[in-house]
Amino acid sequence: MTPTYTLHDGSTLPAIGFGTYPLRGREGVEAIASAIRIGYRLVDTAVNYQNETEVGEALRRAGVPRDELRVTSKIPGRDHAYDKAIASTKDSLKRLGLDYLDLHLIHWPNPSVDLYVEAWQALVDLQEQGLVKAIGVSNFTEAHLRRIIEATGVTPVVNQIEMHPLFPQERMRAVHAELGIRTEAWSPLGKRQAQYDAPAVREPADRLGVSPGQVILRWHHQLGSIPIPKSADPGRQAENLSIFDIELTDAEVAAITALGRPDGRLFGGDPDTHEEM
Ligand code: NAP
Image 1 (spheres, rainbow, N blue to C red):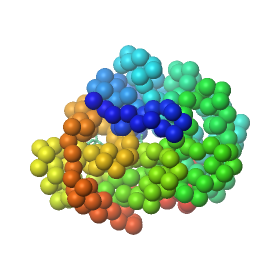
Image 2 (spheres, rainbow, N blue to C red; image 1 turned 90 degrees about the vertical axis):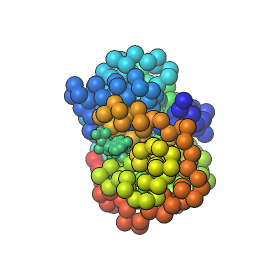
Image 3 (cartoon, rainbow, N blue to C red; image 1 turned 180 degrees about the horizontal axis):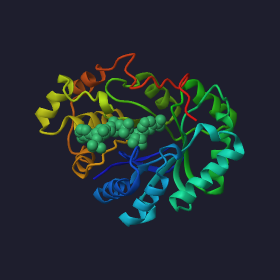
Image 4 (cartoon, rainbow, N blue to C red; image 1 turned 135 degrees about the vertical axis):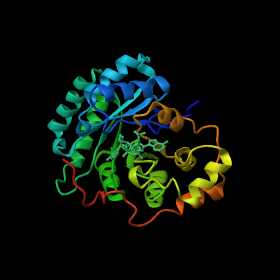
């Protein structure tokens, strides 16, 4: 059974979600619908994944009651200006075939454009209008977070950031804890750089009789982050969801965190310099 977190605005999110990039087309619909049938209730998409239509189709096909689902999308960098952010959100709803998003994020801060405060104000207003139930950000640094909070008085419920054993985000997790923000972890397994063969991962996997992927996802859970692993394979989808009846020791958690490296980002996605429109 997947535990649930209550966020600072009273809304709730399951402790694990399903990442949908780069699932597209008929196979994408099947993979996403499979994940929902298997038990994922938090589904992560974005305008820039170009699969909101497929996600909407998968949601309808899986047939789970709407109020049990938590659908997340993200505003792209090219739509940060206030009116564009509003229009972008309405377009996302149309493609998804939904009346509201459960969680909507600013995808990247794009500081050189410097319009993320406008995008945040748009999210605050969209929430008041009921088109978006909860609002958050992605790839925000401490400075970006403090700026939007100061400008609007509204704190994001989550910051979805790159986090995996090679980049455990100790500093940002401390910032989130101070501000009352829940960490969501993208590329939670570490994608192509997944540390499945590292002794710090392999040993607890052997001890517990689970896969290295489950150990890494359990590490996220014990650190309080919400991982959103992607898998096109129903077997691995189910495996990744089965992390709530195993327990790592504190020493095992610390050993996985110790795999972290200052240059551990997967593709140099430093939010101060990486731009995505
Ligand atoms: P990931 O979930 O860490 O890794 C996905 C890869 O791991 C896939 O190749 C998958 O292959 C494989 N895999 C899944 N479960 C496995 C297991 N138990 N054992 C071995 N391999 C396994 O990385 P990601 O897809 O980059 O990130 C997840 C989600 O985060 C994305 O789908 C997206 O929703 C989100 N994201 C957000 C941002 C952002 O800027 N906010 C950036 C990147 C990603 P199979 O499909 O063959 O199982």
